Every structure is written in C-alpha cells, then in structure tokens.
Image (cartoon, rainbow, N blue to C red; front, side, top):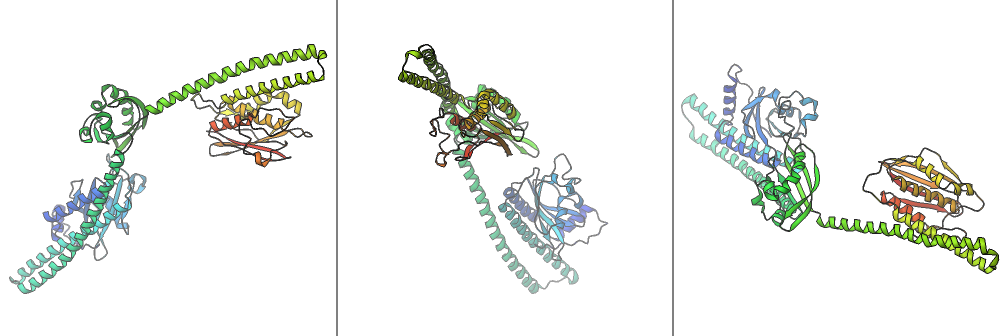
Length: 574
C-alpha cells in the first residue's frame, strides 16, 4: 500500500497548525474523509473483537489520527505510541501481550494504570518506500487474532489506502486548479475537463475495488454472525442452564433451559437479577461462592433449586471472565444431578448391604466349619483306635475339606473387602514398612519353605491404604512360595521403576511357572491350575487384581514353565 505524505513543513509554525495544514493538503481533514475512515475503524474493531482501532499518518515525529474507534485523540508523538515499531516490521505486526516484552516496559501506552496489552498493525508505505502511517487495533487484555481476523485487518488497511488515495488526489486536483488560476487568472476548461474525466475514471475503478472489498467484508461479517448463532444454538441445546452474569448478578445472557426450569425466556432474563430468578433462598445458598468467583477463584458446588419441574439437586460450575485486567463477568453452567444422586444413594445402600452380608456370612459359615474341624480332631485323637483304615481315610477327607472350606470363606471375605474406599485420598505409604508387615504375617511359611526374599533397592512410597498394600504383596509372595519347585527353595525378588506418577513393581520367583494358555485366566476368581498337592481357593490373585484396579493401576504376569513367574503391577505415587 502506498500513501504519499510530504514531510517538509515549517517547523516554526505551531504544531496544531502544522497538523491541520498537513492533513488538509492531502484531503484528510475533511468531515467526509473522517466519517469514512471512522466507519472503516468501527467495522475493523467489530471484526477483530477489539475495543480500539485507528488510522494514523506519520509526519516528522508525530502520528496524526485521521480515523478512530474507541478513543478520542488527534494524535500522539511517535515516541509514545506502539506504532513506531511498525517502522521495523516488513509486514503486519502482532504483539499478543506487551507485558511479556522488555521493549515496551517504558512505553506510556503500556506503563500506566490501564495498559495496552494487545496490538496489531499494518504499515502504510509511500511511493518512495517510506513508512507513512499505520492501521491498527488494540485491546486492554492479551489475545490472539485468528487467520480470518488477520485477513480482515489487512483487507481494511487496503480499503483505508484507497480512501486516502481518493482524497489525496481530490485535494491535489483542486490545489492545481487554484495554482493555475493564481498564475494567469484563467482556466483551460477543455484541458481541465479532460483531466477531470481521467480522474473520475480512475476513481470509478477504485470504487469498484472498494465495493468488492466491502462485499468480502460483509461476507466475513455474515460468517461471524452465523458462527455466533451456531454457538447460541449449541448453548440452547445444552442439558443444563448456561448464563453470563455481571458484577451485580444480573443476566447478560441465558440459554433456553431457563425457560423450562423457571418459566423465563432469554429476553425476560436479560438485565434481571439472579435472586429474582431462582428465589431468595436459592440465591442465599450460592451467593458466597459467586463472591469468590469475582475474586478470581473458579467454583464448583451443588444446591437445591426450586424449579417448575420440582426441587432439583443442581451442580454449578462458575468461571470468571477478565476484561481490561478486571473480573467483570461470570460464566455459569448448571446441570441437574438429581438422578445421579439417587443412583449414588442406591449404590451406597447396596454396598452397605453387601458389606453386612459378607461380614455376617463369613461369621456364620466359619462357625459350623469350626465345629466340624474341632469334632474331627476329637475323633482323631480319642477314637482313632476304634476306626479302621477306611474310617480314618474318611475322617482325613472331612478334615481336609473343612480346612479348604475355611480357607475359601476367609479368602472370599478378603476379596469382598479388597479396594473398599472410604472416599478419602490415602496418605503416602512406605512399601518397605509394608514388606516388613508381610514377612511377619507369613514368617512360618517363609521359614518352612526356606524362601529368600530379595529387594535390590529401597522400595518407593505409594498412595495406597496399608491394608490393601499388605494384602497385595502378601498374596503375591505367598503365591510364589506355594507354587515352588520341589527341589528348590523359593527365591523371590522385588524390584521397581518410576514413570509419570506411578511405580511399576515386579515380584519375580523361580517357581514352577504357568502355562501360556493360562496367563490371561490366573486373575479370574476361582481359577486354579491343576496341582494335586497344592491347596488354594483361587481367590488370591483375583483379590490382587481388585486392589490394583481400585487405584487405577494395571497388573499382569509373564511366566515360563519350569523357570518361574514375574508378577507386574502399578500403583500411584502422587
């Protein structure tokens, strides 16, 4: 874009008079030119969603504003404006946040109580290659322009160039007429008419370009309006109430859900206070949280809303919106969670029933098993000499079955309790302390088997309840000892790695191993590989799976028959 601007004005004249003469010489001081340029800046500010837009022309060390929106100024010294940085830019300059650049620390437009945070400008260049001015937009908060907005900025800069060129030519033409008349007091009408027709044709061509550009901008504006409508339609289709409030808790926007819940349309809500909409009691519940939002804290809370559809439990999300460095609005979205609460209550009741059942069943089943076990022992101790070989064999079957049933009941009860949550986030737990507890719990099993447990590094701390961690490690170590090779003492190694807030722990053994086709089944409840001399309930590894799942971890196994198995699992460390 080329705008010819003369820079030789008598420096002794008053600066205001200089500016007036300078702008008049190029037709930029007329009401027509100012109105047209102001109109372009209003359109530019709207398209770029910025409060300030203006056109400034550089003369000597002063930028004269010839079209503006959002400010009221005739101009400013080059040293005090951000436009001076345009002289160093080859194309459109965008500064998304001036406060992040040291170059702008001492600039008066940035270093004040209401700083300019965002700036974007397109340079205007003279035919001699000099920077003659700038078309720019500004905002009091940092932001980004999308590709469409940048295209609109550059398109309007071209339109501004055309407007300025038109008025410059007009001013030059009439200045020539005045000069000619001053020389000889006469006018060559034919020659002037021909020149005037040439000017009219040139301006007509430029007007055609301006019309095309205007049509393009109107199309861009229609697209923006269409996107805005789509956004409103999307908010209207939301399952909850969406709104925007000002500092007095009055509605600036509301979606259609308010009509269903409170019988108020969007037009009825605009400018109305929230207290009158949801009622004094409901407003009293949430007003303290809204006050925190105006201090910059996003809030999420629940309250009981009295709606046309009855009393609802509503979950509300509130987010502050900052404008010019201040929180001036709140975005609110409220959705009905009444059914979810009912389901949670039903689930809690079911869990309580299951807890009671598992506890009572464990006690009631163990009692007769204890009697069977006790009387079997009495028979063996006091009456074994009266039983033949078959009777003693039957008695042995009874004792073994009772012991197996007792183990099964104990393991089922442990399985039911595994991973049970109390709703609290667990404290960090030292796994070295957990391992010490496990060794103490199964010390007889360790001593009888001659098992050796090796830890090559200090174990990490994990965010798991102690009872769950003890159950997990104890089941895995006991499993490794149980499935040992007949001619080897169990050798169990525990190692770990850390990755992205999780500890990946491995318990390795030198036992009999597991067949490949059974690797995916070992964590299923009641699954047991057939080993006639090894007792078990098939619940231990299923319990491990349940514990790890509760903490959003993973557990898996790698194994080779005759060489041993490796149990891998992850637990959170944060």
